[in-house]
Length: 563
Image 1: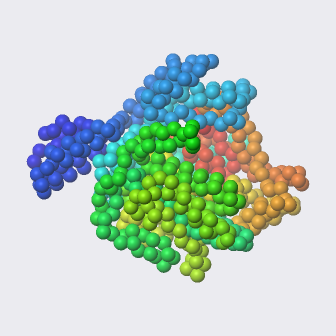
Image 2: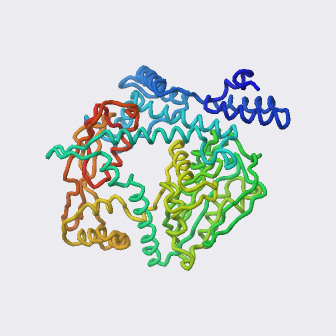
Image 3: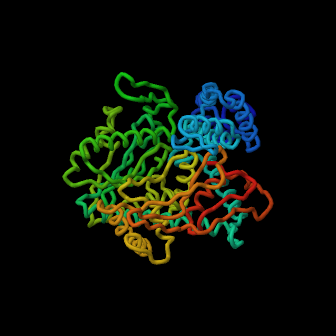
């Protein structure tokens, strides 16, 4: 039998990465029911509604150069940005967000600094390259989702194409890190870049251990306040889900958490490619059509959670939480949360939670059964950390997880696919509420080796002994002003002409105590000639390394570091 690519021009609508999958299914339909052509035409129609470019790195760089040049023409210095914004809209690129607290290298502040920061980004090839890379990756994955390739029966969580791209990029990133050294500008000491990265929170073991400590000691801290722990599973409405399970069964594990096991993977008739999105409230509310993506599902959950928190605040109900974002088998987004609430407030909390999650499509079948699942954590069955541990590990490296119920895969493969899903759709994996304390201050305390005075010494000892409970207790005392970080401006502005700052230590203002924790300045230098790894996002890794115990990092590569 001849290939689709040789016999039917309909394949031209598909991204080349998916042609083999289309061909395999076309042949299957043709063999089983002689309706291969109908299948192909249906898929072609879907692909035409989901265009996805397939440019290589050189093509993306060229497109970024053209886009930046176009913006320079549309918004030259001193002119309004409207025409450039119209161009962004035509390219389906969101405008950059610049903080109102921005200070430019020439001292400009306020709205003018924001405007010029936006202009600098729109005219930057590097800004455009990052945006175009992400856009192309997300467009390709959206086509795979709509074509029906992403589900537990085929390619779980993420398409194989996007998984391969993510793994290749990880490898190139590591190659770049391994090709760099850190040099102390004062002493000339040289250290491999990977040593700094592995010493920080980019090391999976360090990141996982830190989070588990925060949750475990956080639970003790909140329990002392009379709060109980709830384990929540939160899902978006059916219209966000391309597939559903038919004839599966619900398994409740030893901790009371429900899992859907087995069943036939079938198309969800309620799935919508485009979703009506309501902005605002009352008469000023507007409705726009937005493309249904995993990121949009995450946004729906985020908006719902924000409304819940606002309602809780109005009712004077305090809720501290930690949440993990995960994909369903078909790539749709859901959350797992640990929430800490006063026992007397649990009924009101539950009622408000359900009201926010049923604000849309409340009458659809299964909404009141599947959209929210609340399990009261029983200390006899496990602590809060035990309930959330496997979800944290699954989003880092899969360590200590035997099998993923959602996908049926082993932990390592499942974790790789989840990581690829998260990076493709640019979705934040973890979030802690303020009640868990400022982890940045905790990390600075762990740098301090010498004894200090007063409250700083108490906090230092707590950090040195990995006693996060003591740290939270110290930081939460209303009679004491909490510790804060000391920041100084970097000597050079960023790529967009803005003054940036970095943490160099801690201070306790009431006692005028200052402790400098970053005593070295390191430059990043290339050890080898350029290689294929030169297209990595260096800023991401410099930011990670800055959290390592080494101190301040400065980039001395021939590349600028973008904010």
